[in-house]
Image 1 (cartoon, helix red, strand yellow):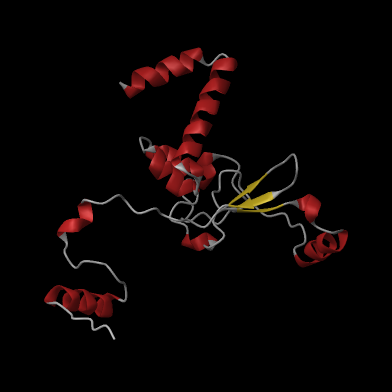
Image 2 (cartoon, helix red, strand yellow):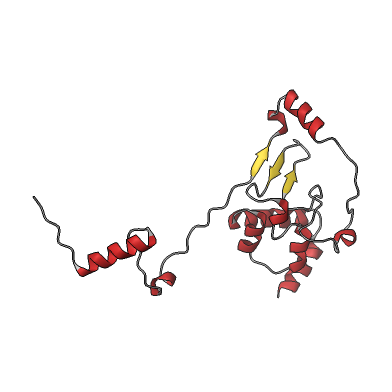
Length: 176
């Protein structure tokens, strides 16, 4: 029969494990900035494809949520003084949902949050802040930094194609 002798270090490790509930974690605060940054796992956006819904589901949805006409802002000046988070989810600049006009699919960007829990609800408010990093934009839009970079490159290519060279030169001077 083997006997296991505990040392003082073993006992300290066992005490830390009992206190934190996690094995192998040191209690030193000095080790926090030496390691790699933790990976932040966000809840991925959820897409509801209209073509995958049955006719019965579409009929029930139309009965539960009939089409209503109500006032909503049509220009930035009309919504600039509206309370935040913005209550107009159907606005094309609202960050909670995106609707693809070609397919009719609805993408819920923050399925784990309610509209009133969003820190930023309007893309125009974010654009008005100006000068934020790709990581910050990615966090606001629930996208990765790399995807934001791809969208930026695509947007700059579209500007160039449509004769936006003057605008690109202006933006380049403004960045200096």
